[in-house]
Image 1: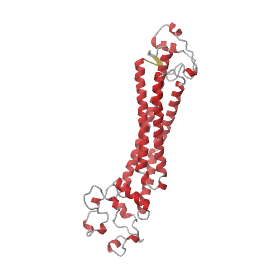
Image 2 (image 1 turned 135 degrees about the vertical axis):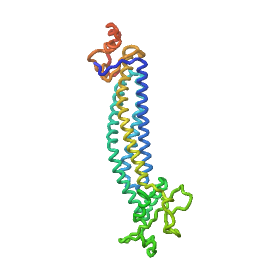
Image 3 (image 1 turned 60 degrees about the vertical axis):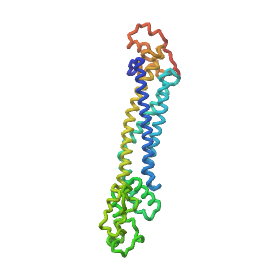
Image 4 (image 1 turned 180 degrees about the horizontal axis):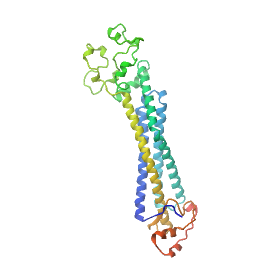
Length: 337
């Protein structure tokens, strides 16, 4: 008894084997891509947040990096395995090793599909936490040296300013009263009823690096502040927009790659099964280069000895005489598969 048996010629087996090797190679490259994407976001976003606030980001993107690394290693072993079984299909335990590799690979991509399904909700949660961290960092810009260094580094490297725009610095209480001359008429204009002062001043790190001229990040110190345009010399894009673009781009790309990996892994599992059994059956029929049937599950698999023997199955395709059944006795132990 053979489930879904198909006859393959020598050239068809070689072509099928190339497809299997190509599929495993593409899966290997996807693993590398997922690994590098996780590392990239870890360095571009999580390093710009304070250590105690990076838990969710590190959990998500370290998991993505580890998943990509495992996919890479798994398919690296798969390349070696597929190369071996095509040339030594009669090798001891080759059937079992291919089955275990396919089973583990299928389990891994099912886990990946679960990861991909939560990428969208995870992106929303990370965006909320990212905005909260940026607000906290802007408030602590002058009182916390660690935050000041991180905010300045982020705004310079990503060429951004504030959360959504530079106006966020004008509405955030980041300049404490002790740093301001409170009896100045310019300062008093921006004083709130609760005593807070929010003048239209932004940190120097908001300045555009491509502008050939002075940066008006502090118009209150200019001779004629009303006549100078602050926005032309400042980065127009908010840091939240810049970081969210990287965040969503990575998560959504990872979801697409994992979905493609799932389809690819299932296809490779099926194709490698046909590839291996056809190569093994050709050896069992006495001619490694001859055509032979291949299947997903059937005679010689894990000690199965019921139903038609291999020569009878082969005769169904070749139309050869009954005497061919006696050409080679098909008595195999499970270790010789």
